[in-house]
Length: 306
Length: 304
Image 1 (tube, rainbow over the protein chains, first blue to last red):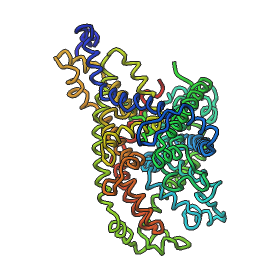
Image 2: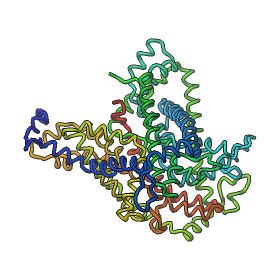
Image 3: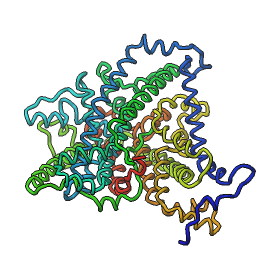
Image 4: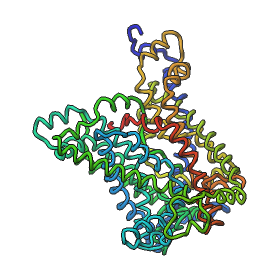
């Protein structure tokens, strides 16, 4: 390749106030931009509008002001239950999942044989997550003839009722979520392999042991990755739907009434589109606040190079 | 509504993997051997635990109904019975479900490839007014819970008469696409040398030809990655088909399986046979395209 010519210079032609590259740029991104407007911006504000209306898909939306929000916050105990269930799951599943993924990635990054094999074993389940594996787990966690309780029985522990028990239904879902940590393991493994070797060498010269290196080199260098997976993990945990819908359908006694499940029932079973939109907007605000809070707190522990 | 892949993909990872593997574990000899032994123990136990559910699913699907509820459990059904698969095929149009799912998945995959390459190229290689702002907008839509826009989108599609058609599941892949896939493709294109574009431009290529003739052939790994992720998320998609498809002959395997289980809730082998048939294409794809799932995971941009 000859001398490199800055692309700006090649690009300097002007046509009627617009530069050619402006037109080109907008042309290339237009498939996204169009969809963003049609299926993003318009529905975003439409659902805000709908949240102030009563709309059951027949006739026109009827403006009712703040009545949906009033009902939601003050007259709907199940809204609070669904919020509690979702937060409880999120608090249990996200940190534990990140720790498990981090430990597995750390171990996979050790000088071991068959790394690719182990990685495959951990990663595969996260690719198959869906209805089929939800049914698989419903069967594995069946209190009577499920594999998990059978194995627990072999070592003399009487397994809990899992999806049939109010206390154990959420832990059962957390257990299931651990099976899907493989994606995070692979992200962490890539992150670990990108930590510069010379930092470890410098730490060794300073007399750091394995734990000190983990604490002072690995974790700070990995903190942006950990932060990213944490934010996405929390957002993902708020999306919990499939398993709760097909396996427990919110039960027993609303113990797995996840927020999205509750929203889904209002929107697509009762066709309360106005009320469901209010639920959606409250969810949006909650997710936004949690994400911003994490971002704010991240300054204290996330390390960015340069 | 689709489960987005939880993984970033790009280039360059191969070199890194070779360069730095295990600095963290360099310690003194005995301690090192002990810790390695412990690591193997955890990894082996872990992989057994991760594989067991699949093995149990296959094993159960080959049992008779009696064997499935036997205590203590039979680990390997001998002789294996294929009756459960027969019951499954005979009572439910599974082949139809698979066909529908494949159609939706592949068509929307083409859509995702179309949008991600074009838009990714636009963000990576053209320098237009408002680009950086729009890129931030694109990234922030990844954080938006899809439920916020789900209801008006449903109302729009309903007005268009698209309920119980595949349009709601396919059209958004072509118009809009996925911010994840666009981001991924943009990050990949950023790693390709700009000199390629400049040289081609001097030779008289316009931007579209640079996109199509110069860069796309170099983007094959990223294209394959988007393709496999689009395949997996399309195959697993549950809420979309649940909301938009109504009649059994239109249904995908994910929602079809639910109907099936509703009728066969006591027939564990048939239930597991159905589940196995559902995940089998994913497992096969995973093993065939594992490199694209894993190798490319180069967090390009994760640190920015």
